[in-house]
Image 1: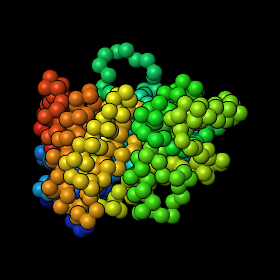
Image 2: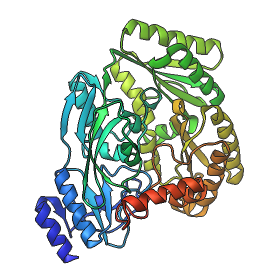
Image 3: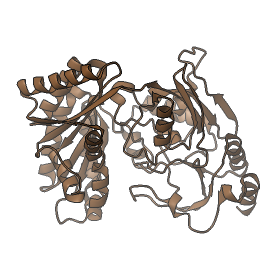
Image 4: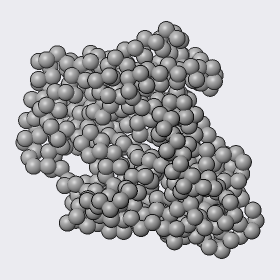
Length: 467
């Protein structure tokens, strides 16, 4: 591979290629479940350089693992241990190319950190609503490659709904210029939707045009204690009825999730006493702060009257609102500090969630007494992070080795029986590839594989992931 690396260095320069030395920052995943060995790390600074890399990889039959912020949770951007895969990092491609205020759109490169895209929109007096816990390090390209969701899907949709156009480099090094800002374009197959959510297996997203929204004049955040998941679902229905489109987010956290945060991150204040379930609600009103306050207060009072809210705390300022959200977003960090766990990023019809939670909690308690279920997520769009930790005193690695397969079977069977999905927003990657092949509709799988063969016949783009 010396000739290949020499040719790559000639194209990218010394700053654009890392080969030899310590590449560990690019070779392991955020969860520390996967670690591989890269042939090298290509760091192109432009779309033209990405295309040049792919032409060389195609000519030399070198497989490529695209990588954004490397914050994924399913091993989708980690090289294997063969030493033959080139990591292609988009980290140097981080320009916001432009904002079209009249069109309410922004065009940015794939390596832009999500928080920087949000800041660019805010500087223009607008809102880019995609928001998730890793926004300080995840990148726009990775968000699109995995069709990221986050905390505001309920109102604004996930990454797919926010995207107007893409620029993509193909497996053979061609560039598709699809950076349209159009909201209507009925001229054939929607190639944009094909690449979004494809996890780097069909092409390399290098830039995107994204929707922007008016910046809300007022955001209100509250925590509400609920006695059961049934009550949380009832509160969600009430919130939709009272607030309509002003309901931006509706999250839930079970008692064990907040107890884990208290144990691992005791410096974080918890405004409400422990409840079986705690809901986090956000209302945004672009027209009137007074109206937003009135809706929120009336909503929570009605929740108390109808018996689905036991207690509530409304953030009195921006700092308190951020603290409420920080509490929710710290659950994954608390889990990481506590050790390896079995993660489930599942999606269900909201109407099926209460039954699923009751059945699964009981089934897991019967399967292994003392097991701990850390359940939290985006109830508003039916997405739960139903995570399972070892009983006290049982080493996490031993727990995973002995029980992960059986627990996955229990959880995914129950999800499938209720018409749900085994991946709501994290993707498939390496972690769920075999599970997908067992559970996905056979016709859908055959179509996906046909598309992969058509666009990447040499299987150079992220091989061994997704399909």
